[in-house]
Length: 129
Image 1 (cartoon, one colour):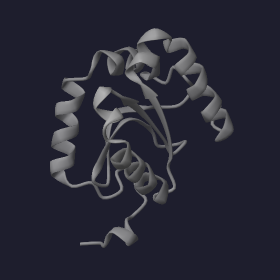
Image 2: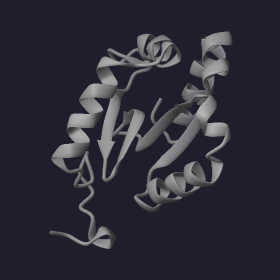
Image 3: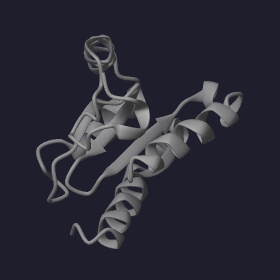
Image 4: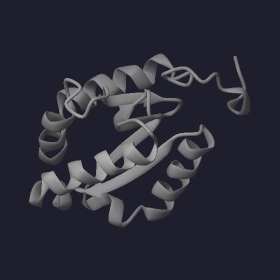
């Protein structure tokens, strides 16, 4: 078994089977905000492929574009009280050379077009559009 510091840089970063099983459950039970955003990200609508509820090491990204190494997180109410955990999680994902952007459920539900534009801008920053 590889140590965390020697994680292979594959699409899943050595995620274990239990993480894949949990990701499948999450895909089947997306929040309303995740469903709204997924309808705009799926099927290469932004010119790159995103995957929903994607395993990465010990984490599950709400949405992930492997080509851009971009993680998009949609945060619900619980994230208000766990900002330290989210900051640590973001730091771990960045350690894997991934870029993380976060939106709240409210942002997605209120103006998904603005969220999509911000994702497009980030893809452009990463030279993916």
